[in-house]
Amino acid sequence: VQLQASGGGLVQAGGSLGLSCAASGDFVRINVMGWYRQAPGKQRELVASISSIGSTDYADSMKGRFTISRDNAKNTMYLQMNSLEPEDTAVYYCNADITTWIVSIPLRTTTQTYWGQGTLVTVSS
Image 1: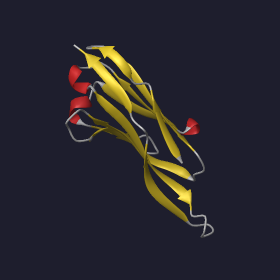
Image 2: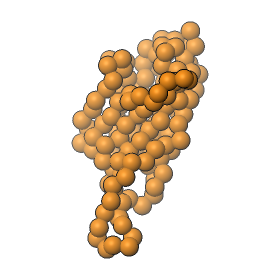
Image 3: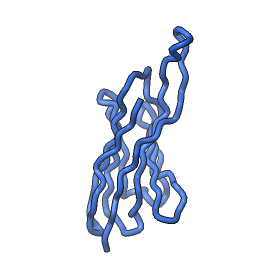
Image 4: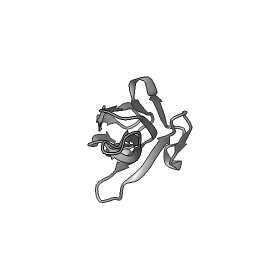
């Protein structure tokens, strides 16, 4: 199972950027998915999360500016970021709780958290 994040880049303050995170591999289902970010010298923090049925949660500083969504048919999650600020500069990571079959135990499953490789978002002032 792999998560592939894409869409980062350089944008001016006030601009917009969209990120994608695609899951691939052999799995039963994707449960909650989320975006995190880590700015230089800071701890990784939650940006937003979305459940398998579309319930969303946002960090306070992202509410009203960022929108998380997912397309279950494409196993892909998105993050639309508007009104970007220099403080939004960070490496953005996606993660997901994914249920897979246990190869050695027929009909049994396990759920693990997987992380994407991160995509850099730079907002210039």
